[in-house]
Structures are given as C-alpha cells and as structure tokens.
Image 1 (tube, one colour):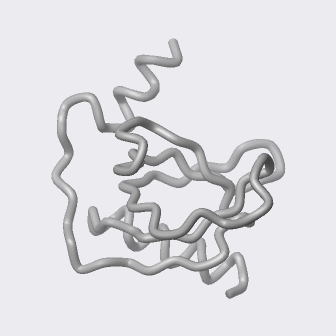
Image 2: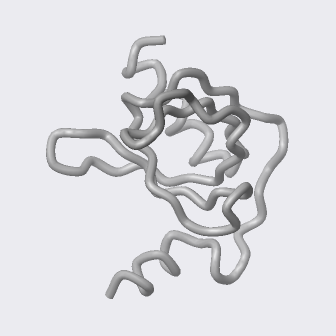
Amino acid sequence: MPWVSRLDMLHSAAQEHRIVLIVYTSAKMASPVSDVRIHLALYFWGETWAMAAWCEMRNDFRTFRVDRIQHLETLDEVFTSKAGQMLSDLFAESA
C-alpha cells in the first residue's frame, strides 16, 4: 500500500476516532508485530511521517513511523478519549 494511501486512511481514522489495527516493523525487530491496536494522531517529524498513538498492547504511548506499517485496517470500533490516553497527555509527559 503506498504511503500516501496509508496517510489518508490514518488521517480519516484519527478524525473519526476509530481504532486502527496495524502490522508494524520497527527498526529493532526483524519480523513485523501483528495486530497492534492503536488510537492515533499524525504528525510530520523531520523528513518522516509518524504517528503518536495509544497502544492497547503496551497500555502506553508509542510512536510509529508510517513507512514501517506493513498493513493497516480501520476498525468499526470508536475509541473514547480517556484521561491519560490523549495527545495532550503525551505532550504534558514530554514537557
């Protein structure tokens, strides 16, 4: 899937508060991690599109590079913004 299509899908999911299921390959891992459920926000970082996301598997914030997503699926499930899981909480942690 071209990265522009991924961006469109991720942007729509973020706007609609949908949970996204991804298969992702990190720089540290040789094989992809499957079925990572995330709530997200996109941002441009240097020369790379990335997303800050609440990862249900890790129960914490994670950052994912869009170009490392092997597969993504927007689920019908809508996430509810909860205290501690919002983008503003991530920024507060980083300050």
